[in-house]
Length: 466
Image (cartoon, rainbow, N blue to C red):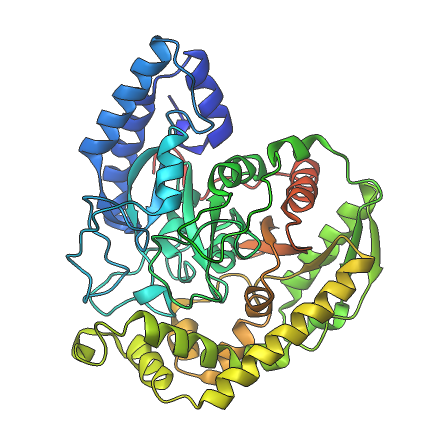
């Protein structure tokens, strides 16, 4: 089973359905790898070994009995620890909820289980899914270089997938929290259209900005997981009722004639040269595949990145109203400061952000009338150093710049896919994102898969002997 942990989720699932592999054997392999690497990487909050093995045995029995098998049959995955899990603690990266055990599963957890996934455990995240980990928590280590950032807030999700500690994971994205760890760890991440995936049972950072989505090592794997996760949920009032298309079916389509827009002034402003080169090379690859690339002008997004903290703070204060300010001393400094801000923001300031959201979303739809998708960076650079991030999180100007490529599309609710784009000279992953039309996920996975197949895969960050 050499390198089994780095094989794709989809391939492993197919091999288990055929009987070539058993879920028990694959799950034992993954648990052994977690045991070996967790001390150095620290991606998990809780490993549910007993439940995982019991699920694997049940699924193997169902295959032997000839029962119908789900789209994720037998595959070990992991969950960001803000998703409710019945009987398993859900800490949300906080001290306040360190011992909280929900009595029900989040909708996405239910759907994963119904599709045959084996849940390995719960993954670390920054406190409350905001900017930094609680002082009590040792942040997950980037497997490419532990001196560099592993991303926020879905830090454990990015590290676990990149390091072969899970075949896929669930992340959430409010200001970039699927895209940052996907880019920093060299994996694929999909932030779906707002409402495409139910948020019921996910502890919120900011309800109107939060998105849940898959993080995997390949586009096919992300499409397969998204198909399981997507769909209407009566328990989420923002859940969309539109039918769920066959995302994996879109992978076989060519990208000839697909229209990709690029705003070079947006792509290049404040961005390191290696990221700009990665985007330019991606544009050339798409053009070589037959896509039509044209220059566009992104609508004014500056009010959104400058005011993102206003929206996030108000909605986060609502989410934590049962605990803050009564238990303020149990909060870390960054999240406590956000909550204090949220309780003091002027109502007119929040309303202005809602008008800015509406304007940007409408103007972006106009741009996307002429192209199928946009291409842009995810971050200003490859994964920054931990030293840089420690100062950046305390500097509002740096934080505003950092969410330049992410927060606008959380406001607008448009779907994105983050794609690895090789390594820079320092051996760190480079990445870019495609931004699609409302419910344009099929076009995004189609383009992402074509790019992935045309490129040269990067080697995993840790070899089998790590």
